[in-house]
Amino acid sequence: MTRTVGTDDVRTGTSGVGSAAVAALRTSFEGQVLAPGDEGYEEHRRVWNGSIDRHPALIARCTGIDDVRTAVRFGRDSGLTVAVRGGGHSFPGLSTVDGGLLIDLRPMAGVRVDPDARVAGVQAGALLGEVDEATQEHGLVVPSGIVSHTGVAGLTLGGGIGWVMRRYGLTVDSLESADLVTADGEVVRAAEDENAELFWGLRGGGGNFGVVTDFRFRLHPVGPQVTAGATFWSMDDAEQVLRCYRDWVADCPDELMTIVVQRLAPALPVVPAELVGRPVIAVAACYAGDVDEGEAVLRPMRTCGSPVLDLVAPKPFLAHQQMFDPSYRHGCWYYVRSCDVAALTDEVIGVVAEHGRRITSPLSSIALWQMGGAVARVADDATAFSGRSAGFTFNINGNTPTADGFEDQRQWARDYWTALAPWHTGVYVNFLMEEGGARVRQAYGDAKYRRLTALKREYDPANLFRLNQNVPPG
Image 1: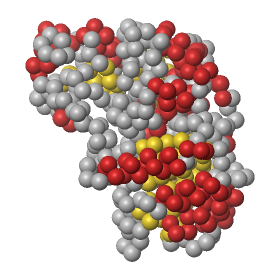
Image 2 (image 1 turned 180 degrees about the horizontal axis):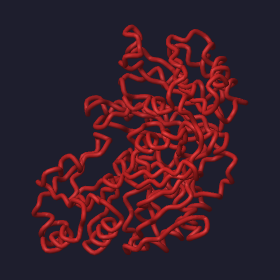
Image 3 (image 1 turned 90 degrees about the vertical axis):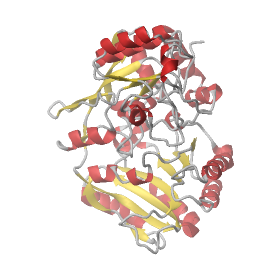
């Protein structure tokens, strides 16, 4: 149950933080420090997932690394539970807290691009769309996700899967270095040649070790035009479409990345009125290479069976990166279950077809991510990310515009995930809800979990940073 925290809590109540300490924080802080009742508090306490409704005792909106250090030390010394927010896209709402300190990095959204060196410096509050806009001016990209208002920090620290990963790898595979504020408020740099074990852990281990304030990424050529979009079929044809898809991607080039989507056809200008609300299965694709080559590679799938809508065309990569934005609006209610599978066997296809036909919410969907390519060619133990050998990753979303019907959609997602249980091989940590410590350990595997635990003991022995997919120090 959500508890509303009043200003008395900040002064002398359950938070245990005195007014003098709060006043001292405000004096030493360049950014904003917001308490309940302050102008802007209601706006900045909210996160992307509308089902999360929490009230921090204080929100520290950081403008630079000194603010982050100050906020971390305040959280440590005050005993407040600390949450860290970049873009605020955490499915389970781990980027906010009831009655604690929210360290808000969103004001730190700078992006610095060196097109000649093909590197970008990105602050931790930046969103994917902001990075894309800066890099696409030069026909370059940081491999990232598929919703432009996702935060760079959370995506990166969990691994980072997206439209160009099969050609260029995960987001973490392009990470050259990161600056981190530790639990004692000190700044460390992590890279292959400095604090290498920490650098290993940051590439998939989430926010367990401190607050990353700056990332340095390698850039790669993509666009500005790509062949991309989605082809739709009736859900009645799901089995035929999935078998055709399975054969098509079996030996496809790395430039091709696809996501199979099941949903009710959305009410968008590009969707004919007679199709809106009908159950459909779609193959969304992006060819990160020559536009004409992409058209030839995509043609066999687009001619499978009888598509009801084909939106594949040459387009700006920036436009394609925003394709899913309308389906993941701020403030809607989101619930996800996820798993990796090795292959689309006939049995898995049967589960997909059956449960896709049970979708009743206009926002519920599945996204079945094609893995492989460059992701799989990096050694499994090279980073903390797990899942490089996965064939496909399921993201099963039971979503609603408001609280109405949310319980039913959440149960649909759970039932779908349970039906796939015989074929589970792992899970992408960024797609976990609050599922318990055993599930986090499963996400990493025993060997990686032991390394992460050792890092946690070194950098955060008191587990100050525990609002995440937590690896306790033991």
